[in-house]
Length: 401
Image (cartoon, rainbow, N blue to C red; front, side, top):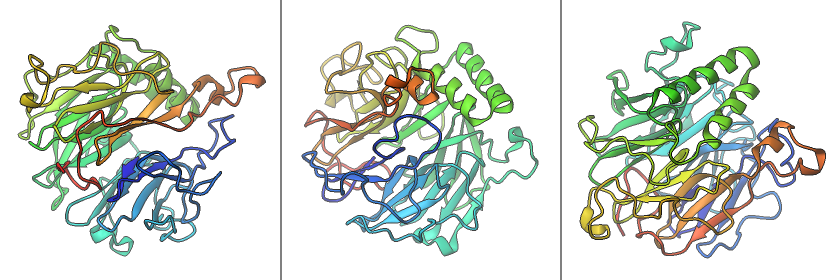
């Protein structure tokens, strides 16, 4: 989910309406909402074409309000203009079918587009957003996923800091990869928690990373279980293990999720990792105009969204320190939230969260037929005016309005 220069929210959909019965094929399209929540995309399918088909955790908006989405079902990159007209070809940009299932994508301040392929563990760079000039990095030709030159193991999300360095999280490890955008061969590696997910960089250059399996050995054991599932049962079993791992955690569990915080020099902040505070299975993290952090939880429990005090403590309630929760012990709840994935701060300071799943066993065929349509989450929840305004679109680190 991302916001354009007019404050409209663009949301990538895993599935189309009516396809909530099985996690067999991601074929969703693209939805657009006005700042007040009114749907601006056509009902019931949203914006279609351009190779879009099951957008994953990959959506970015450039300085022209063009929307870039990465797809899981069609294994491509799709591009739309601000009115929802597809600009990419009918099959999307797939570079001769060299792409696998795609996830994170960003636009950098100089106009470049960077994206990651979770299936093939590779990085794609399009200078000035030009697919004809696309370059591939971190490709592993050994056949051994543990020998990726960039230590990518199911890479998930990425961000760029104020020094033009790319940071990448990994689902199947505790490793975070960093390299200069100008020279991806200059690799650096940092240890975070297990099963890296969303990344956000605040205005001071601090890097906040979501660890869905926490920072304990129990989290490590769950990752190993998920890796074994890939070898035995393929992607379906892999997804089941991961979702079970993330969604069944509860506050207080040893591996209930955590946030690792890196200073710009790569060292961890003294209070890192952050756990508890309503953090259950953190998926995404965003920064508001006060440099405070907002975190979504993918959880079947009644977990809410968490607001953490950032490094500008003068913008937090009195007595609250950096890394401590401003929100209640279970987070902010209500508003029809289900199992959450993305969270974003609109230019008016509104906090938007996406309902990705409603009842995950329904997607795996583990329920009676009468409950088979309860899989996919429905809609978005908006907490109006709860955060501090930021400039949109988000290109690079957040900017205050």
